[in-house]
Amino acid sequence: MSLPALYVTGTDTGIGKTFSSAVLLHALRQQGRRAVGMKPVASGCEWTPEGLRNEDALALRAASAPVPAYADLNPYALPLPLAPELAAADAGVTLALAPIEAAFARLRAQADTVVVEGVGGWLAPLSATLDQADLVHALQLPVVMVVGLRLGCLNHARLTAAAIAASGATCIGWIGNEVDPQMARIDDNMAMLRARLAMPCLGRLPFAPGADPAGLAARLHL
Image (cartoon, rainbow, N blue to C red; front, side):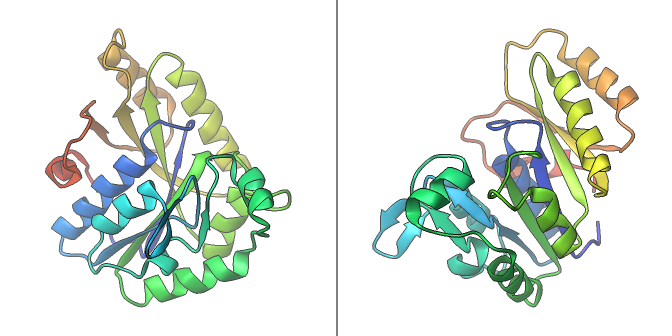
């Protein structure tokens, strides 16, 4: 995959966008590419001696090479673990595209590929006036969709794919991520997803809490 950047979205919150993005970063690095992550907006940040830090953003930073400045990787770090619109309002912050675009440009200058992780599901808004589709169009990013493999995934995946297409963005592939180890007929569900989603499957990641994303990079076909 020789794309200069891509946007990782999901079929819902908590379906493994960060883990999948980290695996993507390692897969790109194993192809010899300089790959860095970006989490433009992150809520649920904790105060540290270095300032506000987000667990997901730090995971992307750990998977990046070269290692980017945190402020570029996560230009909007919001304290409360709420939807970004609410977390930003409570922090007295107004989310805007310009700071994200500037940080993205700095990351692009040091990497062959920037993996940008979104928030929640595709239609989760960034602010009252800003949707994720606006960010994708501003940065001219193709989209990779992470499908959380659990009951209901067919509906969620098809709805998300339709919403991405309706926004005018291009989904170039999807990743199946096993989030429910008890899911029945998971292979059959994967087969149905492959048959019904127009874009290719880039791979399937196992349910593996605490796993090193570098060790799973070979499972993705980029």
